[in-house]
Amino acid sequence: MCCHCEDYFLGESSSQVSSYDFICKTLFNVLVSIARTHYCSVLSRQRQSQESVKDYASRNGKRSETSPSCMREKCDEDKEMILGIESSGLTGGVALVAPNGIVGSVVVTSKTLYSQRLLPSVDWLMSKAGVTLGEVTGIAVSLGPGSFTGLRVGLSMAKGLAFAAKLPLVGICTLEGLALRAIFPGSPLRVCPVIDARQGLVYAALYEIVTPSSDSNHRDPWSLVPALRCVKSPVACKLEDLFGWISEPTLFAGDGALHYRENLEANLGCNFVLAPPHKVLPSPEEIAVLG
Image (cartoon, rainbow, N blue to C red; front, top):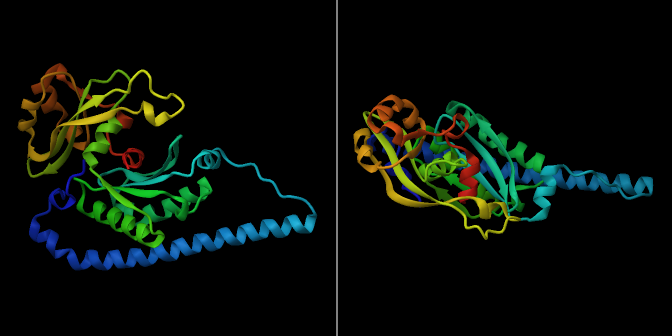
């Protein structure tokens, strides 16, 4: 399911990757410290808030009641929640999903801002959902392929949060998340996520969509989410190598599909189907769902 992130860094040679080791270890230690402080701070604020409500209720001789938001209601129905983190490309962010649906998400639209906005986005999302990091079941993070800098920020933050809150952490292949994101009602039954690797290469995979059975439990929204069967495992290859994969109408997604759109259309004709604009790039929601 997951591809090894070290093999798929965007435009980085092995010597360049190794030169970052010390920096990355330092960054990880710093983020662990930040995450631990952040986690303790959130717990402290929650305790203070609970105490102030109790004091107010006792002073006024009545029980204090609040109107929970729709996000809080979603969380209360089932405590199993997954935090998804996506930072592999031009767009990313964080998302929180529960068995009964998506609780909420925050989108970051520039990979240069991941180091500034990812962690505050987690804080904002948890605050709006009315939960703490300790109430989350686990964390899912995008492993790549993708931007070296973006992936390092996302992976370090995910490791720091998981370590601080003692949560399980799972890595998800970005290509698989892209494939799930691209699907829409009536889309082709095969999907090919393509990420531009520069230097004349792309990262790609081919998946077959397995539609839910007719007897799926319609009260469970995740039972209606299509499954993916891997037809071609994630590889780094030339764009021309993809042409031999495609023999029927296929849904394409990813910045590589956008960058090479004209070439793909010219060589694949009607077998090339581009995902809708809001589904063509990675999303933290699908990373959380796959987690």
